[in-house]
Image 1 (cartoon, one colour):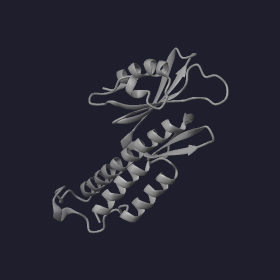
Image 2 (cartoon, helix red, strand yellow):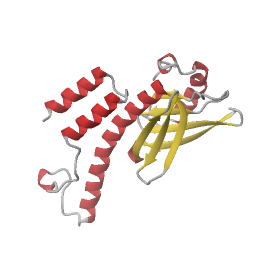
Image 3 (cartoon, one colour):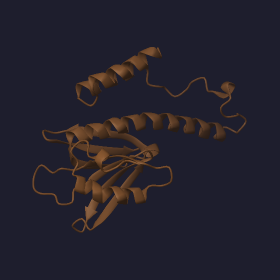
Image 4 (spheres, helix red, strand yellow):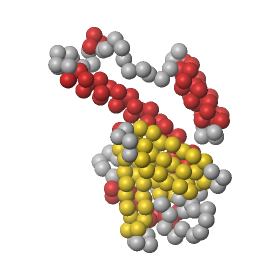
Length: 200
């Protein structure tokens, strides 16, 4: 379980984390752990009760204080249902937009750039993992609908024409753009690049 000290690595307001973290932990299900919390920092005006985005190993949770911070409104999205997390950087901060597989969208503005980049990196890794899980689940559903004569996870049951998977060149191109945007460090880029090339 992460401590408040571990969650203020990108200059998050410790008082906000202190208030939000216990509430998020209460909200967590079994085997669900908070991985990161990004805290909004408005560039114009004073924000006594900033919005937050909490990342867990199961969900992304948008937290919006209500009634002058006396209560919190939670909007959560299971990683299995998240199709895309988009980051748009401005001069001082970034906007994070979440799009679900059903087309629902939600966004939060004024997330400090360092926090937004870390949040985006985590989201990209979760998206990649869940995309493969969704693909496997869809294949299993299609097999079940086809009459159930096929045993799942048997090599001969694998379809000949599988759903297109992102190739090494596409992955490298995506990684390069993330490096250029400052989302990945050169060291992170080199590690991921070496991993992809080793599988070719």
